Length: 262
Image (cartoon, rainbow, N blue to C red; front, side, top):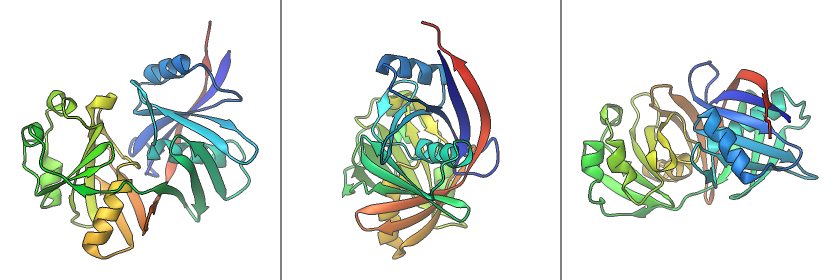
């Protein structure tokens, strides 16, 4: 069996930056075990699989370790593949996912994803968090399966050197650290050793919590954000109440064919 595969860098227009994701077009679903093995073989933070439908594309995301319910950068990469390589003719794509129907709109040179908000609740600093991050946060919030830790400035976020085994012991799938940005509205980093990803370069799903937090704090509906990982990523953000829009660019790194032998 031969399958097409693409690899694209998301939240960037420059190769070797942003967040790489693999995208595998399918006609029907493969067995879950096989899709998980492909994701592990790719060894990227996410591999996206999609199949066409009558009114929407069905979309699923796998890390090297597990299937996840929401992934921003792999959604952006999939939309980029459809627009750029699969001759998708419209300017709006609907994806049917474990997080409900998600849309990606092509507006000028940006692709805008429409995602549900992750509600935030103030949360006591968990035991072990400060030791794992090496710096005590000013405040902490619970955001669904994630924890959001807020710091004073961009320099503090950049200098964090996590203890990943210690972070993996915390009862959260991901840890977001954030602060006001020097040249943008806010910056962030995202750590998810529990999902097999020590540090994710550019994380769309984290911004479903970051956007409402910074929109309320700064009193702005539209914000510009950078994820200050080693590869980096730029997000154009909009707060729409119970939904957020996350805009970005993507660029193709590789197109090829997989050979799966039974």
